[in-house]
Image 1 (cartoon, rainbow, N blue to C red):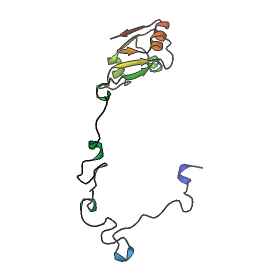
Image 2: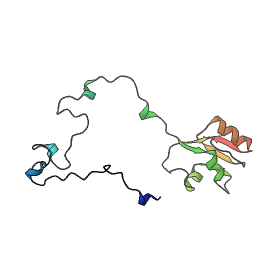
Image 3: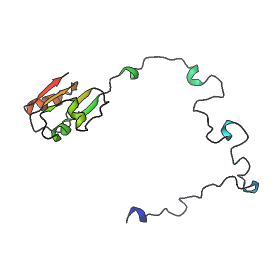
Image 4: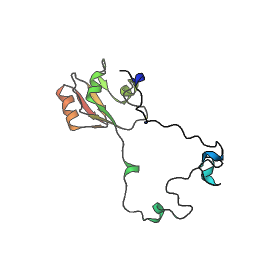
Length: 147
């Protein structure tokens, strides 16, 4: 059995509703969009939460508390398994990771995580290391340098 040979069970699919095919069809004239106005127009819709000009609920309720989302630091995570795959490189830093396509050039600070094993001694320079990652790098004879 292949994907192209699969068929829907009987009754699983329905014909598309054809609108604008005369008054007798039950979907003629305004084609189920009601009378005039914004929602009758093509592409015309109102955003979620809009209450017709009335002060919306999300603005009526008081704002409480603090949210750190705007000020948080988002790290680019790199696992040890990825570092181990970079052959012929003894010093791993931001420039090397960008050049090898591991992280995006616009990515934030780098954090090295301990997922996977490292089999050779490498000098890794990053903003942050997990405790286990630092331990594994040093156990392999490498060096973990925090910037």
